[in-house]
Image (cartoon, rainbow, N blue to C red):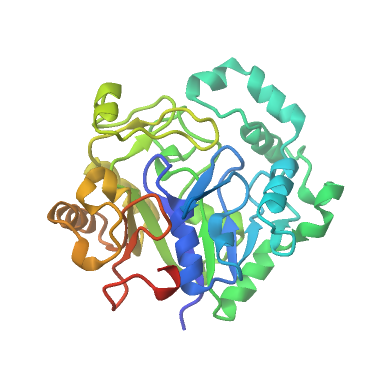
Length: 347
């Protein structure tokens, strides 16, 4: 019997729409849990549905399925105020949990990062995440169980998630940032984040054992982006980005994202080796080919997108099962569906 965990990781440098794919899969599978993995509040996820924009830094986007309980895994640094603000803003008082072992971001750590000029050089968001994780490894950071305001939200996320998978329930693990920003695996050091961002790292953040993993979804952005310094193959000029109306901005900092004109397939092959994806979600297809904007049927796949899908499948040795075609949650073509249309619940 298949177990229940679907791990979502980013192939490249982040900002690939993992939050949207997570929200989609939580609805499709009516997931019991959606768990935030990754480093901390230094990376934001956002989802558009209709005229509303949902922006989160601490909780996963799976809450858009109203039966899904959202949780923060024990490997993720938690800012109590950000957590509580998101719980309040999105009405999640009864279905949000934080692992009691999560390290806590304090004002002291945020200030330390803001004063560290070397972090500006590498493009830190100054959220306090890096300092918190460093102190955690020195066994000096506080944990969620030490914070009175979090008392009502405490849980053993690892135990609940593994038990759910054992029972055949679906659990979505929503990682942050991207594989090529991994602290110990990216060749771009020091222009990296505070930990690894691979599928296995995400499972570790959630406390999932290997038997619980059913699928690894690697999210591949059709035109990769990067915020801050560090290499970006095939990078476009600011003028070219503006001319093609492809400008993007970071969720946490609002900084403009650097953008590439194509995927470096050598790098994609390397990150596929690290993550061993079983499935691929191809995002920002509308940036790669505007003719597919808003499509939600297999019959609307354009020759340009079909060619890109074939190249990605040959490189990763995994099937592209999702093609995202616009900013709205419904702008998705589900290639794993037997029908030509996306699931009725999302139409």
